[in-house]
Amino acid sequence: MTQKMIDQAKAVMRKNDRGTYTVPTHGLYPFQWNWDSALSALGFAHFDEPRAWTEIETLLAHQWEDGMVPHIIFHQRDDGYFPGPDVWGTGRPVPTSGITQPAVAGFAIRRIYDRAQNKVLAAEKARALLPKIHAWHQWFFANRDPQGTGLVAIIHPWESGRDNSVDWDAAFKRVPTEGVQPFTRRDTSHTNPAHRPTDEQYKRYIWLVEKFRSLGWDNSKLHDASPFQIVDPGFNAILIRSCADLAILAKSLGEVEIAAQSQAMADKAIAAMETLWSEKLGQYACYDRTLGALVDSPSIGGILATFAPIPTTQAKAISDRIEVLAASCNYLVPSHDPTAPEFDALRYWRGPIWLIVNYMIADGLEIAGQSAMANRINRDCLSLIDQSGFAEYYGPINAEPCGGDAFTWTAAMVIEILSTHEIAA
Ligand code: DGY
Image (cartoon, rainbow, N blue to C red; front, side):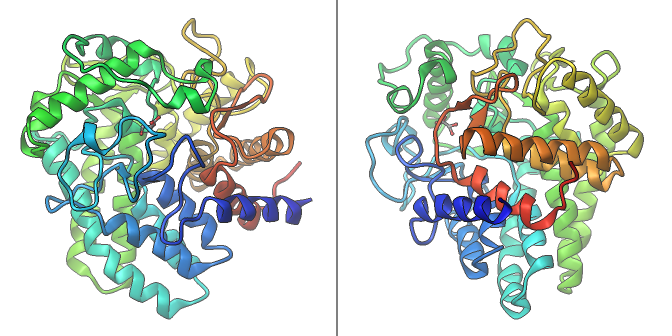
């Protein structure tokens, strides 16, 4: 059973492999996505180490001069996706989007390096990637935390990866729709529109793109100019974990300056993370920087915070919080609290389960000593695959496969979980 699932997962990854990068899935996402690639590399590392390194090298080869690593790299033309390079208008030699995504590459390279069979190759690759990923982390704090709070803001929902989360329903309403150029969505021709964001949300997504484009994608201007500035605990946790992991990796490679700077960024952010703790929700919450207030929304963003080295008391509280969520769904971890009125079991980030997020939550819980809950989450991941295949995401009540199918990072997580865990029944 285990080997069969691993073989099926490898076949999915091979199918989506375009040589030097993978597409998340055929049709719906025909280019390279930032955090998809970094997490997919973890899967490749179990059966093709050089290919794992190549995946992350390709991503970093398209880093901007200011340090940003874009969220999409348009390696080839494909009119099946909207918004394409013309809408972004970033003027890059190989077209890219103009915003970023969760900074998980630092975590990924440390994990791949630590487990590498080919240590010589790993040291060479990690040493070359280290300063690039470090520059990206520094870019975040310089450009998305201009007041030096220790935490960074996203300026577009797509940056978080949790596009239509309930967390920013209120903030997103402040983004106008007037003047947006008419467009045709492509995502809904590849997959069920009931599983995707609404047309209204798409207009606002595009308004922000057009606004940033009108500012020439100058990152020194975008944060302050954006009507949408959200400090997402999950997004920050990923960045913190990557800074902390890069510090350890840099130290073992003798890069003392990168090690010290990375640790300092992580320490400051971990302390600041506590300002996002919500007693009311029993978990972390988003902070709306425009309003200067925490957002009262029980989503997975505040649970994913456990991926960072947060205090063990908070990790225990998050484990308890997941236990509460388990009472209202059949599979863990729903992306929104099923008892909340906005919960929507099949609509993207308003309820469904995502294996990559499950993996990061379980990893953090395990390190914090919450192994029973970590094991339960991993077990649910495998039972979702068993019932519904390698989907993009899954309904937490009935395990429906949602979004795209034959999905790269879902497959990568299955290989990673099965290759590194004995899952207790
Ligand atoms: C999409 O197109 O749905 C992506 O999430 C944007 O990156």
